[in-house]
Image (cartoon, rainbow, N blue to C red):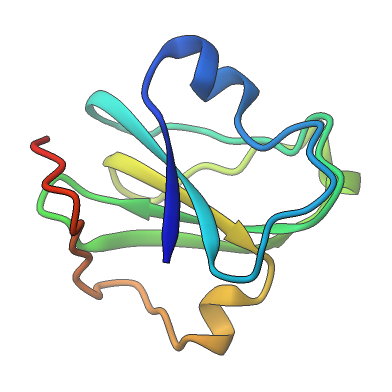
Amino acid sequence: MEIELAQTPRERERGLSQREKLAENQGMLFVFDKPDLHSFWTKEMEFPIDIIWIGENRNIVDIARNATPESFPQTFLPKSPALYVLEVNADWTTKNNIMIGASVSFSNGLSK
């Protein structure tokens, strides 16, 4: 999977908003300074997404499937603190059998 990083507050605020689409095996990884209940919304989104919260131990702690642009201003909040959040196309988690508790690895050596 090809991942774009959102590490700064500005990059995290903008996220995938105002993009027309995301390629099938692309995603955006949000990297935070500390684990927390980081909430997400679909403001100015053009397509539905799955939101994957990943804990400090790099296990998936929660998933919001098929968050649609029409759901705004609803916010999506994980059940447990997360250090990372991955946004992918809607249904990607279902197609790839991604489940809460699964382990995640980063091949680029992300140090957090």
